[in-house]
Length: 135
Image (cartoon, rainbow, N blue to C red; front, side):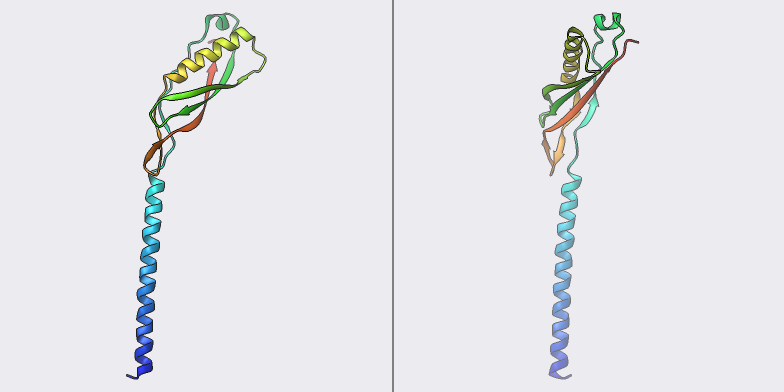
């Protein structure tokens, strides 16, 4: 074999080896990224108790939806619960306050599995919707 052919073969095998190493590096990177993504998930609600329907609202047959925003913490507690809106938005103030209070009490009792990011529990915001029906 000539020296040119030998050099070409060495070059070819060097390139092949480097390609294989690069492919292995890409595969390892992709696998670790996939693993990190598979170790990430949103919070999973296990139980969401319904709020008590206030008697005063039931007597008036008031139907409403209360929307809250809360933090589902990495420790497994629902925290930082805030009222966002009521539908309809023209509820009597006393009834609105009762609906909000009952919704917050129910939200505090939610059981959930915390969100996971890169294999570790993390906190996340969640929107909570509670419907009040007189029946």
